[in-house]
Each structure stands twice: as C-alpha cells, then as structure tokens.
Image 1 (spheres, rainbow, N blue to C red):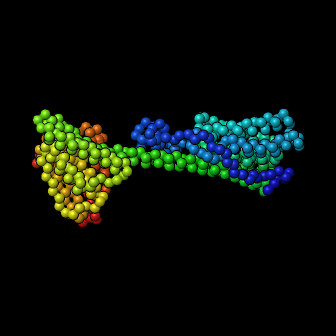
Image 2 (image 1 turned 90 degrees about the vertical axis):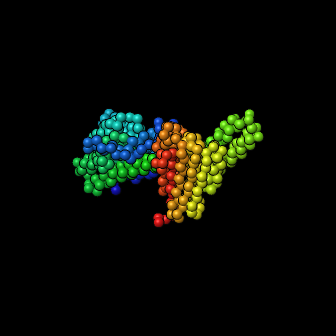
Image 3 (image 1 turned 90 degrees about the horizontal axis):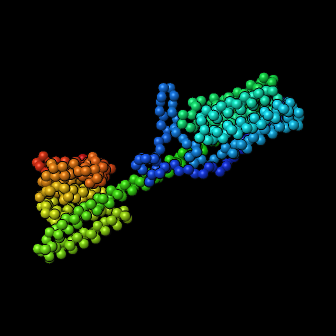
Length: 451
C-alpha cells in the first residue's frame, strides 16, 4: 500500500535478536536465594497484587536483573532508518525550509533513542520515558503535518517507541497504570489524524495506521515475552536452589537422628569406663570395646546416610534400644504385637525408637522404660513410657531448649524432625507427661488403607 506520492505507508518488522545484558544474579547473597532470611525463604515473591485505594500494585520486576536474552535497546535503534525518508525528502526533493526540517529530524531521532533507552532501563524515574515519548509525538506530529507525506514513515518509528514503553515500563513496580491499548493507541491515532487532515485517501490512512499499530504491538509483545521468559528462568533456578536447600536440611536432620542416639550411647559407656576403671579394669576394657563397636557402627550409619540407604529398621532399633537402656542403668521392657509393618512405616518407627530412647537416656533420669509396638493391620502404634522426672524438672523431653532436639514446638532437630517425618507419612506424634507419672512418647502411622 502506498501514498499518493509513492511513499511506503506500512512497515514490515523483521525480528532482531541482539545479545542480552550480562547475566545478573537473582539470588542475592544467601546459600540459597533471596536476601536476609532462611535460604528456602529467600526466593523473591512475584505476582502479588496489593491494593491501595483504586490503584493496583504490579509485580516488582528489576529490568536490569532479569535474564532477558532478547532484543536490546540498541537493536531497536536500528529502526532509525525510517529517518531516511524525511532526509531524502528534505535534501533531495527540497520539501520545507532546511533550517526547520533538519532540526526536526535530529530531534525526532534523539527523542526516539532517548525513549527506547529509558524504557529499557530500570534506573530512571518512571515519568521520564513517558515525558520523552510525549515530546517525540509532538515532534513527529508537527513535522508530518507541516512537511507532508514524505515524513509519514516516522509513524511506524513512533509505534516502535510506544511498543518499548508498553513492553518494559509497565512491567516495572508502580509503573503507570495506562492500559496497553492507550499506549499503543496514541501513535496509531496520530497516524490516522494527520493524513486525514491532509486529505489523504482512505486506503493510505489505513496503511499508515496499520504500519504504526503493527510496529507497536509486535515490539510490545516480543519484549514482554522475553521478560516473562527471563522471570520463568529465574523462578526455575530459585526452585532448583530451594530443592537443594531442602535436601541439605533433610540430610542434617537425618545425620542428627543417626548420630544423636549412637553418640549418646558412647558418652554413657565412656562415663561407665571412667567410674569403674580403677576398681574393675576388666569390665572397663569391655565397655571400651563396646565404645569402639558403637563408634564403628556410627561410621557405618554416616556412610549409609551419605549413600541414601535405609536405617536398620524397627527390629534393629528395638534391639539397640534394649542394649542402650541396659547399659545406661535403665531397666528396659520391650513388647511387640502384630505383624511387622511394611518397609516405609517400619523405617519411620525405627527412627521414632531411636529418637525416643536417645531422649530417655539423655534427659529423663528414669529407672524403668517400657517400649511397646502394636500393629493391627491398619495402624502401627509405638509407645515409649519412662518413669523419669525430667518432664517435671524442666530437663525433660517436652521442655528442652530449642537446640537440643527435645520439643515438638521448638527449633530442635530431634522430636521436631520426627514429627515432620510422620506428618509426611500421614502419621501422628504425641509427646508429654504421662498421667501415671513419667513421660510418654506415642507415634502412630498408617500401614494400609482405613479400617
């Protein structure tokens, strides 16, 4: 489609891909991501809409940090080639006074570059690119109206500038709430108004409008698409880092559960060796040999944890608990009813035995401890009841400090970690003083469908 003078009325945009900016870290300085908090909570929140009066708050997008491998501001400057038509019109055809036409061309080119670069930047005041765009519209509108259709190719260039605004500035936090159609519609309306006032044909007017609107829409859509792709890439990386951090937390919890029990046994036996070394060297030597055995066992358990193997299961933990309680001077009673649970519940109950007995040995001051396991085919229930006074003295299970792993509600790794494990398997954990005295830990976990 052409004008009455043969000048092009529309524009066909070619895709331009330019190298993106240097990649900026989206994860801050934490071991995982995000500033100033636990690593798994450091990922930035995107997409929240906060309402203040009638104004919506868009997602906070730092355009300088989004990994955007798409068209750059410099790539859009290539389209200053549209200035070739006004230059040819002034220098070749002698249209308009030179002293007025050349400054208009320079102003249009400079304002176009300024609009594009400020739209791409996230470090300039939000108002600036819109003020520059308004000035560009004024220059283009005045020049096209004053100098005629030889300047009409500036309309698609104006559309490109509006597309940069629509694609970038509106993505910024607190960016102007102008609808996309308004930003793109202004240059399109100007490309209709000026030719219409100049008595151009309807076909030509539609051609100018089509070229301007197409330039604006394609630019806005492409730029916005690359921003969204960059945001998705950031989110994917943050999720990957979060998964790594969750695995680290899981491993630290598993390591505590593995070694806490075994090291407690070693401490108890070492204390026994110290007490009896002078009076009964033979028994002391036996206890020292046990310490060596338990130490080797701990080493093997650490290797199992590193390789992701299962623990020794409920039966093995019950045997180990019986031995550990006896060595600590606590009378053990172990009862089992029903068939062995399936492998996964069996392993979880083994963890529960390990954690519960560790706390009994460390903190209860008990003389008697009873362990019972009951499996009715639907639920497996573990109960550990000791007659210690720890629960009443402030040194026992439920009231331990946040770092010793005693409380279900504090930040320790022991019973809290056990509660997390059971919750993941739809199990329950109850811990507290027993009505008949002492302390009770009760763990229930489903082993099959509901009864």
